[in-house]
Length: 147
Image 1: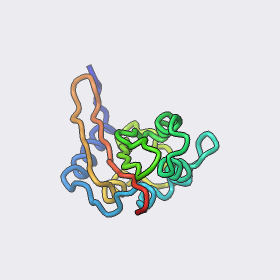
Image 2: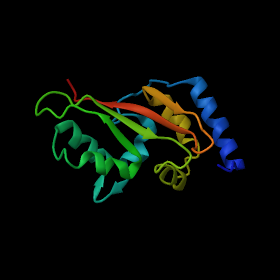
Image 3: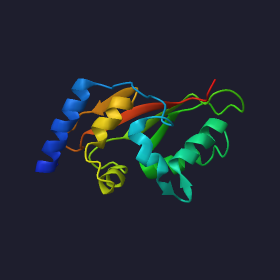
């Protein structure tokens, strides 16, 4: 059985407010969303998120995409692996309480990063908590090649 803490309650209120407001749809391409500026500059395994997003758009190193994005708490939920044409990728950024991006934003002093991300993303997906599992939330972004 899960124990609920004050932190869980605060997060639940924040998540409810974000979900009630809905996705802002202001900048749905992960390469250009202002809320992801800081995250795009972070380097993991020798490559910045910005560089990896460009590699996805170009269609290079496709075998590394999913595993590499997981370091940021980003799941690649759909992508065109075709050699030509846009990737039409659908990226899900975990914005849950224990999200991998949380320490990155917190260390940069961005406490309200979830709200900022929600303003940019195309869609929010919230999975309600159960007795055994905590609430999960994802901000969905797209990644398309320039036309």
